[in-house]
Structures are given as structure tokens and as C-alpha cells.
Amino acid sequence: MQKAIILKTFIHNANYSNFFFIYINNIIGRFLKKGNREIALKQFFYCKYLLKLKSKRNVSLVLFMALINSLVRVYFIKKRFGGQKKELPCYLNDDRRVKYMIKSLLNYSYSKKKRLIDFNRLVDIIYYTAE
Image (cartoon, rainbow, N blue to C red; front, top):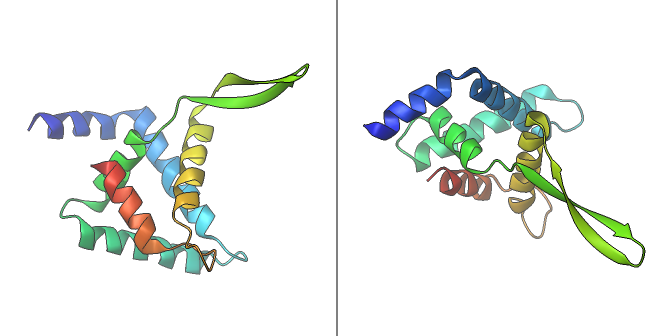
């Protein structure tokens, strides 16, 4: 019960609803191939269908929890100073945080041989990060 109340406050918060809007648009944008938006939307809804089969909860809630659990605040940039390489922390704004998360999410979901997105692996990653 306590968790449901906390999730309702997250969903109605304007900052987190903007995060979710950027998240969904970037996922659909990453599915685009050769400018065909209909295929990208079909792939996105197929991904949501697989998530619905995997979990008994609302799919949007699972996607939202995966987003919240995997956001990163700081990114390390490798710079070379003299003869040494240093890692400098760099703050990420909201849009870049979501894009960095989606990039890493999709990099882990590629199949090994075909270099295509494996939707079953993608759904597993989203589901386990939402737990």
C-alpha cells in the first residue's frame, strides 16, 4: 500500500512525467529504421505485449519503474592530461540521462550473432530493472 502511494506521487509529478515522455519517444526513435515510423510503433507495442505477458502489473508502470531504477546522475569522461588519463565527473541533464539509459539498455539487448535487437532479452532487462 505504501509503495502504491509513492508511485502515484511520482507519476503525477511534472518532472517524472517529462522523464517518461522523453523515455517513450526515445525508445520509439531508437526502433526507427529507414524512417518507417509504423514499423517502429509495431515493435514498441510488441515489446509492451511481451512485457504484459511477463508481468501481471500495468505495462506503463513497469516501464516507469525501470526508468526510475536505472537513471544515472553522473557520467565519467576520460580526458588526457599530460601523459595520464583521468576520469572527470560530468553532470547529465534530464534529456541526456534518459538517452544514456536507453543507449545502455539497447546495447545489452542486441543478439550476439545477428546484431539485431532481441526483444525477449530487452523485455527481460526492463522487467528485472523494474523489480
